[in-house]
Amino acid sequence: MQSETRSIPLATIPPILKPDECRQLAKVGKSTIFAAIKSGDLPSFKKGRGRFIAGADFADWLQRGMAA
Image (cartoon, rainbow, N blue to C red; front, side, top):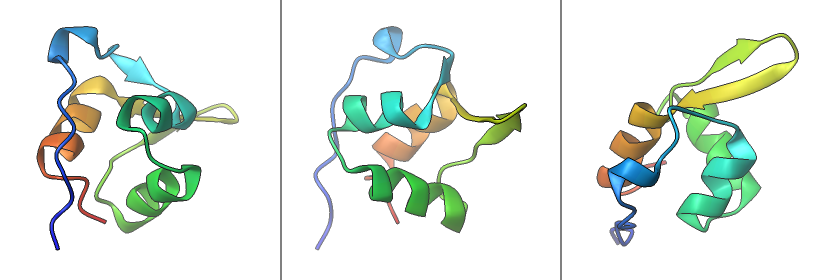
């Protein structure tokens, strides 16, 4: 079964997001975001103690149907 693609205007996605911001925009649970990061479906990077996602990578992940 394929997930419903979320339609979020690209102009509203910030260039850098925290995982919690991704969760709120995609309307999914925290575990969904971290599972996608862990599997490599949603690229992320660390700066200090924080983890961040590029807005373009998040938009691409949404367009792919949040494959996990």
